Length: 112
View 1 (tube, rainbow, N blue to C red):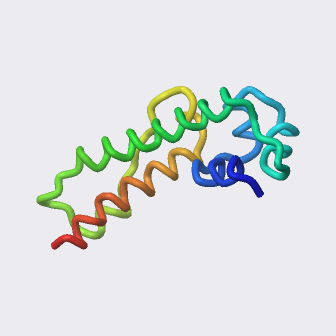
View 2 (view 1 turned 90 degrees about the horizontal axis):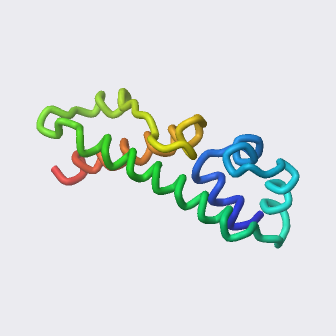
């Protein structure tokens, strides 16, 4: 496994989705995930953009929650979309953003 593979897993992309999002072949994705060969810098930059889109989406969801009336059951109903062209069309980034938003909101219960 590689750091590239870890980032893809974190974002929640399948190899096919990554190939589509990054405009490369699945063979290249497989090679970057399973060998020491690293992708070019522009590929890393595209992944960082996707991570930023996920983070921003999670932050916006957490900021828009009504914390005064939040209860634990609300955490299971968080639903959001991921802005931006890179991450918005795939389910993995949406799941990652939702998980980050739920974790952020769950901290409300830890601090009380």
